[in-house]
Amino acid sequence: MTANTAEIIEKSAPRDVADASVLSAVNWDDSKMVTHFANVVNIQSTLEQVDLFFGTNQTWNLPSDRRVQVELNNRIILSPHAAKRLWLALGGVLEGYENRHGELRVEGR
Image 1: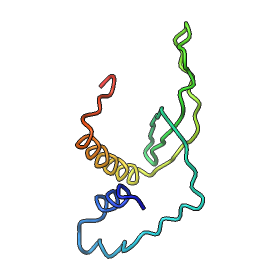
Image 2 (image 1 turned 180 degrees about the vertical axis):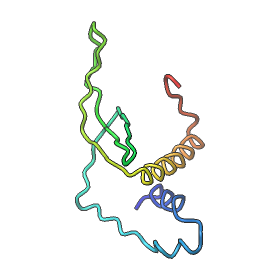
Image 3 (image 1 turned 135 degrees about the vertical axis):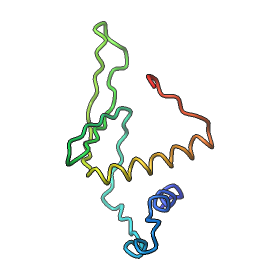
Image 4 (image 1 turned 90 degrees about the horizontal axis):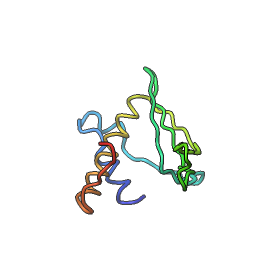
């Protein structure tokens, strides 16, 4: 487990003492884990789920019709509660990153 993973667990851990006894330890089994690179993400949601689509921009030279080709590699489906926990965890990780390396600027925002 990396320091960032421990930090995410700590930040997303329940704050209420009564709830803290529910989760005492996490055993991370990475024996079947695979790694994928993505430089594109798209998100959609319904009442019951949040879908994350990850892919890779395959357009190295923008063609004359200005269409971008994205190869979708993975889809992750989360419950809205799991999506909220992911949002909070990512916010904490990015806040730490920006504190160490400076603000990340995102085009169009």
